[in-house]
Length: 151
Ligand code: RB5
Image (cartoon, rainbow, N blue to C red; front, side, top):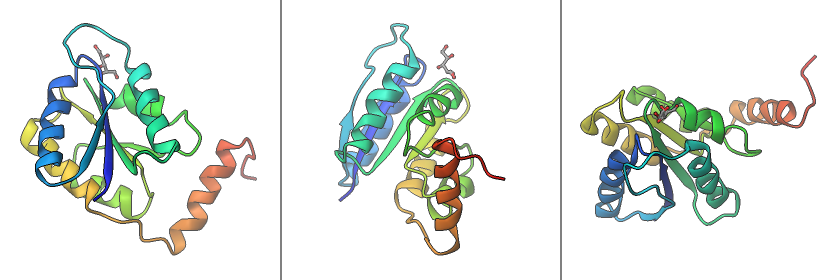
């Protein structure tokens, strides 16, 4: 089974814990980098702790939760090799695995309810990258990441 790393800020920690229980019940291995309380904290710290787990190979995929999911996705996408998608519909959560090979799903705990969040998670973790024509597009994203601007 895949290992999924989870991270959240104070706005997302309750939903993150719900996602953790859901994934563990389905047999996934979960790494939880926190936070674990409602005390105010900074989402880039937890985004970075989680991204490092994917980049060092400890986890295959990650899920980040903050109030909107937006701050987490911005912070995660600053890491080379991380492709984070902020989603609130199940079609996008599945397609971002199939086409973008996204390795992080970002969720807004103030945007989606727990029921939809778990559907988003299931769509994300159970879908696989299709490869094919999408490989070239991802390598173009990598070029941009490496400062080689598309002409
Ligand atoms: C915290 O109040 C909030 O700004 C954060 O959870 C997130 O929504 C940022 O994008």
